Amino acid sequence: MGYISIVAENGGTSREVNARIQKARGSFSKLRRVWLSKSLRKNTKIRIFNACVKSVLLYGCETWLVTNEIQRKIQTFVNRCLRFILRIWRPNIISNKDLWKATGQEDINLEIRKRNLMFMGPCIIFIVE
Image (tube, rainbow, N blue to C red; front, side, top):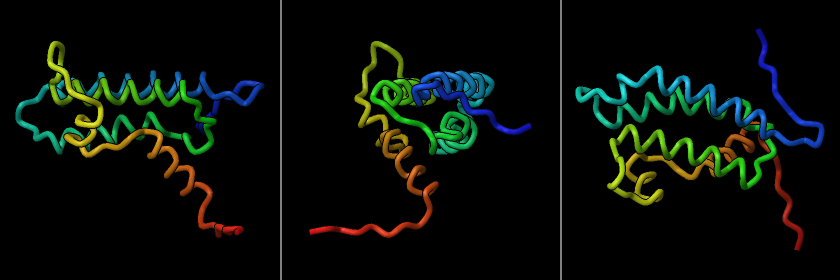
């Protein structure tokens, strides 16, 4: 079965992003035993997260119109997952930048932009002075 993208008449992709977050949440919850395992190293868990959850979340993101709201939703989901994997619960607090550094992740907007550029393929950039 092929992939069906959800796009509103006005070109918005909010419904599509919400559907991707729900699917990624399902993938994340199915791996709960992995996240809570004490026998797996942090780096292994992060690699599993990137392969099994983040790939589901960002599938088709090359075609999304990424607004600030969409970016915030996606980044919030990723941050919550990473905090769960690292077992950082309240009242413990860690900044997002420290979280990304500890897990080798980057701002989700940068990752989406990289995927957009790869999707467009090689291109020539002209600089007009």
